[in-house]
Image: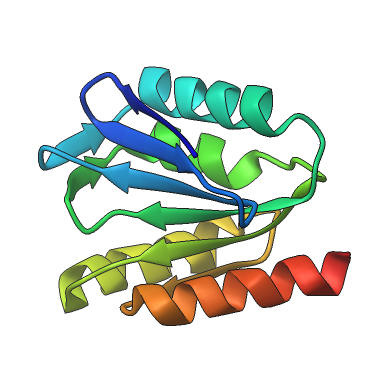
Length: 129
């Protein structure tokens, strides 16, 4: 297992299951610099192995529109899917708007249960293996 904290906003954890966990901390606001460092870290650690991403935004305050657009436009062929973990109806509403209008380039779904999100991500990896 590897772990790093980026800009005191996101903890990145890589475990043996090929699922990268990106966990918002400190009620943060996600900005381009942090997102670019998250992507670079994941790609350096993973290289070109098949993987999936769990984005836990339960402790995130805001993501600006430029950062959301950049996240949606990313296509990395080794990423089988992205699960976004939310904890409130307000977060879910904003995340659904993101999914509807930004149309991420990899399969992406919202979850309120981490277990369900991980189960779905493992299935996405199996589909691509």
